[in-house]
Image 1 (tube, rainbow, N blue to C red):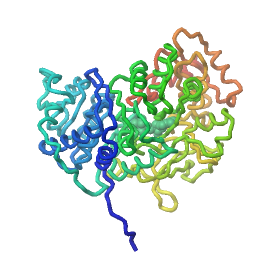
Image 2 (image 1 turned 90 degrees about the vertical axis):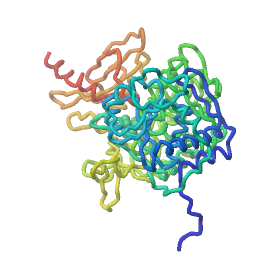
Image 3 (image 1 turned 90 degrees about the horizontal axis):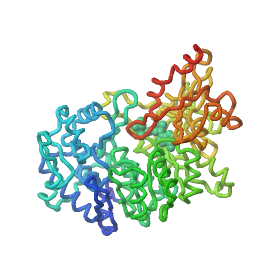
Image 4 (image 1 turned 180 degrees about the horizontal axis):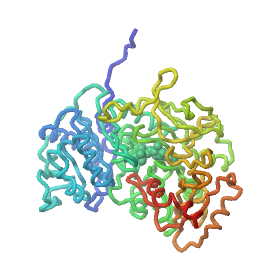
Length: 549
Ligand code: ADP
């Protein structure tokens, strides 16, 4: 017997309809590429998203057509989030930090019909336009006055011209919630990028789960500033969450340096922000230099790479900002775990709580996870055992876009499907997961595994270290040994011996890195993560040559 409840499809358009109707006056504030601050409301955003949907219809866009964007976090990008997905087309957010060959590859693989871009990315558009086979026009996200002159691009259109010429009379279509809404490619550290194709249903369920108190804990009283880009896994879902809960949204545009971020956080009285650790390093550096503090920020969501215990303490002890450590991936829409305390942790000492918070957290409802050994057999949830982390749930990918039958899923003994994350982790008895490494970054020393994240966290706790990466370097006797690559803080004095001595008593002696290489900079990828494959190319033979010498 079926229940007698309404069959209402879960559609992304319902979020902006709700925000308009119930939080119509709530503001969306954007730092524009043009340099100024723009502010309007959810009501305005909804009106312009409808105008955009009419404009796209006029341009011949059909349901399921892919519409690309190369854009910062800003109100026009937000209008496309709702306008494109709302009309039944698929929003394809492209990461502009990727190499132009990858951008062209992605646009062709997705068969984008139109590409919207912020003026910053005009040179990139010029470089790839001739190679984008399916694109009918490129649309500059600006007004008539700022349109580039003699850009040399065929079929260049102006965003504000399209809006001006379009009526706001538009009724969002109703369709199956399983229809695709959004497409986001992984950054493709190895091989070509792969497309995660989210559906309206998966996005909506992710939004509900991510907003919960023990998840990102967002409400109508919050002012949210996502530093994490809207071109990277939908800014962790925050543009959707803001509409669902009616929070004010602050979008920082291209200005992601510590000073610009701080000014915006203060001016708009932001309460929650979100980003990768490298961004927060810039902000914390700015605060240290200027002696400033936060007057409104209460929480910061840190993920995408491990948040070091040093950063955790700095935010909480020096600036009274609570850190929410999250883990996820493009293939998971992205949220999988969040490091919020259970009731029993509240009674713990600060030191014990820091140890819990440093882990990546426990699964949000909807995500099931487990660790398995090389034989695929599930491993116990204790602190001692690490294994390959697998997940499943309604917002986890089942297949990649146009993967030609190469599904990434693995089956367990009961025939259940699991997505292998490529991460190696432990899970403790409370269900807190801790990433020890990405499987391709694990250091295999004489058959034993050494987790690089632990070693990096220790180095980062040294006051003279600005950035540290630990890689597997080839070793004549042990196959691989840990090698530490370090950027010192400006003017800091630090020797190899001092840094290695810093490890004493903190880890098993045989985990201590074999050597330290000091460099001026560590290469970061398109999503702000350390590119260990490049470091391995550069320094992988370091220990061999050292022994040989
Ligand atoms: P990509 O860099 O492949 O595009 P994602 O942005 O999807 O990917 O990154 C997913 C990966 O980032 C995870 O599999 C994990 O290795 C890493 N990651 C994400 N959050 C954390 C975290 N809090 N701590 C450690 N690693 C993390």
